[in-house]
Length: 141
Image (cartoon, rainbow, N blue to C red):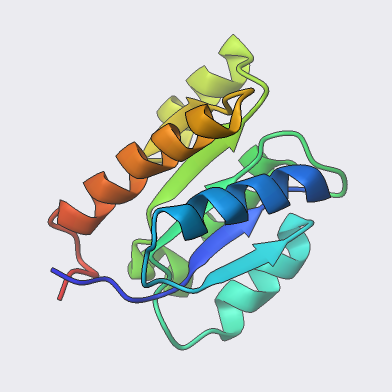
């Protein structure tokens, strides 16, 4: 059940993007990594991309469009919704309203709080990626 599409990172904090990228590389995943500092560029990419991404890891608080709005935009697009891309919030913010909204109104597959240590980020991403590598999913091969 290989899912070879890219891992999509969406986070306006360049330091967090770098840490997450380093952590994913440490896990030696075969998936390429595509990073975006805002959700508008990420949405544009998703609309144009031929391949199905492996997963989307998205921060919650971002300028222009927050993570909840980004996921809602994906859910409202029939072509992207049909791709069934696993969407995980990976954010420093764990606002109870945002968590409740994400699960009750959107089709997310997880909400994780970013660790403050690099080792915690690696551990989080290992759990997330191992699950999605083994999970039966419309994009499984």
